Image (cartoon, rainbow, N blue to C red):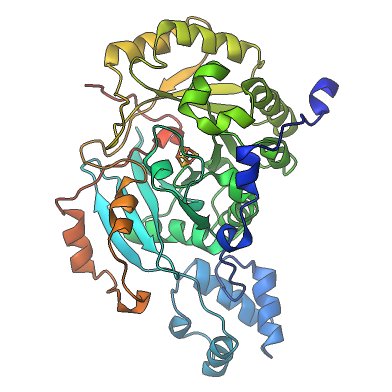
Length: 422
Ligand code: SF4
């Protein structure tokens, strides 16, 4: 353990530089947003505005239970309090749905239009278990776009705009709950962006989703492709959530061709940090491995991956994700035979692995692609001119020809069913 306790020195290279995004792009800071505040903070706000403390509890209920989207919907509160909130510049912090599209398997991808007219994707993934109860997973974005440009990812190809604030992460979960009219049971930070490059807001949103929206820590997963020093930083918070690390290759050389940012964070340093995460939190690390036909899906790659993981000790699980093709990519989806052979090669070496289904494959887009399509179009001048989705329109959209896609490595629906490959 002592050997693990040192913090590995990693050169300040491209990824670390990306972590130091200039303020204008790293955050669009808005301090007068109610969503994301805790109950004690809301109580203090009520007191500061001349109200009694219990008004803060009412505010908390309105935000997280009633899910009010505007201050004028706070009908339980005195008009004077509502006026004071507005006059002081407060707002709820919810964004309109710009577009919602669904795949035949029930997965729905939503585009939210933020206050600065930028679009972010969030995905709702319903899964019915053997007993008939539905788990609803929200796959949330942590950035508008992503600066890391992984070679297989549509989000990376779409460029990077800015980090999301905590309320812009929390509101994605509430939007999914409203669309499905069902409680979100699981949250995965696997949408647009690299969560570790926006760790402060991700941790604040994680706290809010846990304490205020009441989603268990164990029902949440934070994923990363690897940003130097952040896994150790996350470990110090001792969250009971799962850490998912996207490997995609069993060795450094191949990994650098798939994940360009890997150059700044050697594989052995990542594995050391994952060991440390397990020791610090007691939570096993999940390794994501996207299978790309002819690139990283050979039995020799599986053997090498098994050796790499054996060196990591225990406390891990591998999710194999057959690549979901995206426009403009030379990568191909692996054949079923190759996927099964890879999985068996791991299991024969005592590595537990699951092959994850890729939801929404019947439709046409991949992670980040829907947003890319829409963001290329001129945006409306103001979110006020954007019509809200009426229930009828929403219904139309769900049957729209554009029906989606969603690569969403649904990965994290523990116990997910094995998919049928073509
Ligand atoms: S896979 Fe994740 S980290 Fe890589 S470019 Fe896409 S969103 Fe960014």
